[in-house]
Image (cartoon, rainbow, N blue to C red):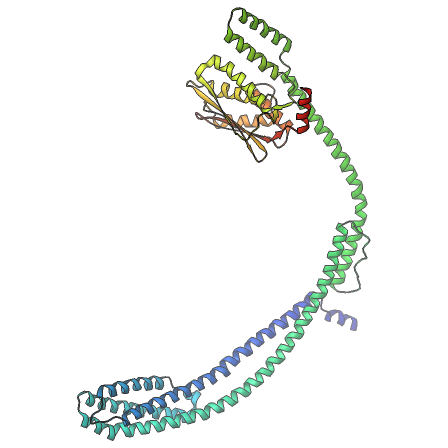
Length: 511
């Protein structure tokens, strides 16, 4: 029976911390309530009573100044305007002070209330007499004004001063009594306030202690977790002596640690299997790249080089015998072009050779189409053409594509702009034409085919360049933009590759 009661009375960690915090917060509100009560029912009445005494004192001073002004005035030759001005100013101060004197019977008591009423009544009579006297003064009737002063104003002012003097004495006495009573109450509230602070600190410390205990076990778990992350499973287990939620957390953590230690061996075996699988995938990728290269080599080998060069040489000799110098020059350009095109496409060549081959190709096109097609170069001065290495035979297919598909169907003359620039280690190649362009569906189809370059069909030169760039470096990028009736732009970005000094030294030695 006793054990069952203890279990029922036992509070878990959350409930303890929650209870401590609730008590802590309640006592904070209690302190706020005591402070508010002291301000409203102690400090405010004291300030109000002191302010009331101050207003009565100000009224008494104002009446005294008015009496002094009237007593010192010379009725036979005095300055009437100055007297009237001082009386009005004194009257304004007196009325303002009288208006703010407390008239609440509940707060000032019966005696003060009766004196305030007597002061108000007497002041009303005094104000009337004073107004009559000022009227005579303003009409320069000095005799009547002085008669009113001595018969009415001066006696009324004397009574009024006496009433105000009695009122301030009564107010001071009542104020002192009220102050003593309220200060005693304030001392009692200060004592209660101190007790609430003490209780609040006790419960706050209890809540803080529970939180520290919780954080300590959490910190120990965090350190053990870091050790587990580093592969250290030999760290001592967390103590499980406590019977509350912290003990449950420790037991669960230790069980998790033991389970992870058992899984590490299995993960090690799986990791070895993953490495073997990755190696096989790498070999498969290398084989796929090799097949792509073989496909490109097959494409480049479709023309019989021996037959091609023999045929060109026969035509060249015939042109020499017939003294056709322009034809001879065109055949020489064609021979150099095909010899370069049939070379090993894996070799990187200086950019200057690529530019030369494009010029050879352009001279052949120029001979046929005359002024219909133009090629404009824009080469950045920072590029060293002889030192910059690029894939062989990759500029000519781009220019050919622009001439054939861009400017070929166009009736009016057209231009191809070939721009070469360097920016932060990246070579930028842009081939732009003002040809017929493409509709959006046709452009999307072209972009889609560039992702898996076909071996036959239109734009085969462009597809070949795209495939070679993929094999060259994954960072290479080829982008095609076009607009119907305005032209097409091909932009290529590739890493800037320069000749190494060792290669240059070897070339100098061979020469």
